[in-house]
Length: 345
Image (cartoon, rainbow, N blue to C red; front, side, top):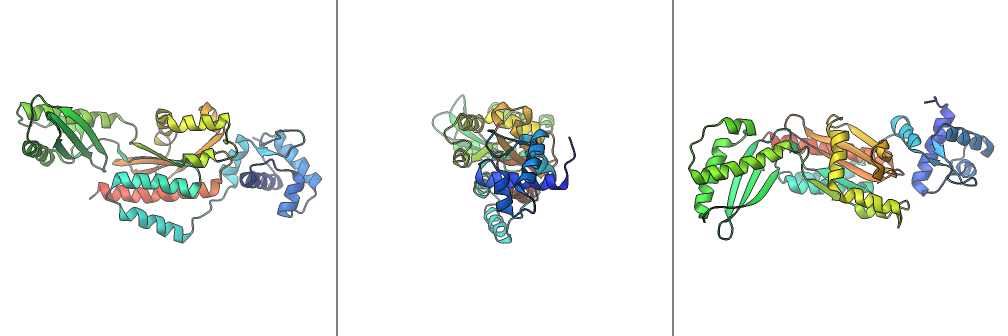
C-alpha cells in the first residue's frame, strides 16, 4: 500500500466525513467551499484523482464526485478516524439503566441491543453471555398438564435453558420441586465433566430427569455463543443505500439469517479478539458477499474463563465510525462489569 502524503490523508478523511454526512459523491469544488481549504479546486481534483488511482476513492460517473472504497474506509478506520467520546450525561444515563436490572441477564442483553441501535442509528446485535464451559447453578421443574413438565435449567452467568419433557407417568409438583432442590444443592457450580464424575444415588425418575438436564448442559457446552438479540433493522432499511433496493433485501437476509450472523461472530470476534477490543469488518472483507455494502463494528465482552458475549452494530459502509466505535467500546466495558458481578456472586 502506497504511503499517502499528509495532504492526501486530510483530503481522504474529508471526503469520507462528507460522504458519511450526505450520502452523495463529493466533488473538489464543494470540498474547497465546505471546508475552506487553502488550496485550489484544481489541486484538490488532482489529489482526488491520485487517491482514486491508489484505490482509496472511486468515481461512480465521469461527471460525478468521489466516494470512498472499502480500502479507503479501512485506511480511515485504522489510521485517521478519532473516536467521538460519548457525553458524560449519556454514559451516566446508560449506566443507570443497566444497573437497575443488573440481576436480569436476559433483560440487559435486550437493553444493550436497544441502546446500541438508538445510539448508532443502525442495526444492533448482541449475544447473551455464554460460559466457556457450562456450569450448573439452579434447576426448576414445573408440572404442566398431564405428564408434561417444564424443565428450567439456569447456568452460572445467568443463561437460562428451558425444555418441555414428557414423563412416563404424572408426578406431583411437590415431588418435582424436591428432586430439583436436591440436584441444585448437590451440583451447584459444577461443570458437565464434574457432574458426570459424581456418584449420586438416584431412583428411576431421578435418573431420567438427571439424564435430560445433563443433555441440555452438554448442548450448551458445545455452543459457540449465547442467544442472539437483534434491534434497529428499520434504521438500516431507512438509509439511502438500502432504500427499496436489492442491497436492502441482502441486508435484510443477513439480519434474518441468524446462523450466518453467528458464523460471522464466531469467525471474527470470538476466535480472534480479546475482551474489550473493537473489530471493524468492512464490506464483508471478501468473505461474506451478503455484506458487500455493509460494515460491522464488533466487540467481545465478559470475563475470560467464565462467560463472554459479543455486541456490535451493522450498517452501511457509510457509517459514523468514530461514534459507533465509541458506543460499542463503552457498552463492552459496561457489560463486562455486569458479567463479572453476576458470575462472582
